[in-house]
Length: 414
Image (cartoon, rainbow, N blue to C red; front, side, top):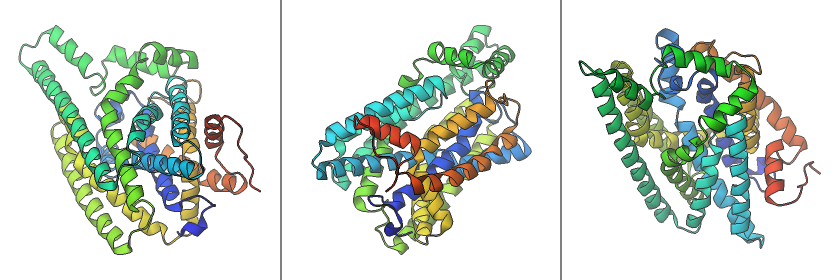
């Protein structure tokens, strides 16, 4: 798709990539809405780990999970650079523009976390984005070097946690392990182990219950989770944003490179990345979904291959986008309204699964829950383009922009 197919001021390649990413993210997030938390990484914890359910987990792990989040994070870094450069060119303070946007994004993220869904990523984006501003003038080599430093920091944190999980799992599996040791292990690995019957019953009752109970749990039981997310996911997110800034500045994410170069990156990135993820998934399955294997494989071992695969997906999407077409235009529109679509999927999914809506939480297996995904994709593609044919921004994009600029922005197209 050529740039002249986009509205003035838009880089259509970024919109197209963002549209694919936001839809891909929901493909894995749906498990977080539909089932208890441990099911997200551990299919043996809930939702089925055999047959079609195992195949669903496997395909998501190999092809989508963490790759679309990585792409979305890179695009956030690229967009941050684009916004600050345009502000500076227009004679506005790039710092004021940027920090105003990040401050309001933090507000949106906290509201999203406490009032809608605890799987929020916006809070981390806002806080990391505030720090990433310091790199906005850095050349591509420095951005890449800094990204590597943050990925190494992330690897050190994840290796330390993997060691801790390995020691705890070994102690719990040792002959004669005491009840105290087993309870400590259950508490340590509660986010990855199947919930004990009493805890599972409480979780199902909570999320099949009323809205007030769910919000109360977030305000009391997991009130500090956004801070923990920053500590655990911050270094990786920082590295990805810096990669996005480098990708924007080098022309990779804007479609400026030649087709052969994109094709090579796509073949190598997706081919080697998918093969490596398939091998990692096989190892995870052969471990019997041990906590140590699940955590290490997802958070540590797969990282270089995930980055390789993310670059491959970006190259492939850019190549396909150059051909244009009705579908590409609709996906690009979904990317222009990515903020609304991200929050909108949370509103739709929480209404479907939680007790104040249809109450499907914990009632579907992994395959059945995933069948919601194509329906939401169709909804995203159906509304985004017609809306943006009439209006300048998606609803939440308009609200964010108006708040950050301290005045209502024009909404309707001329």
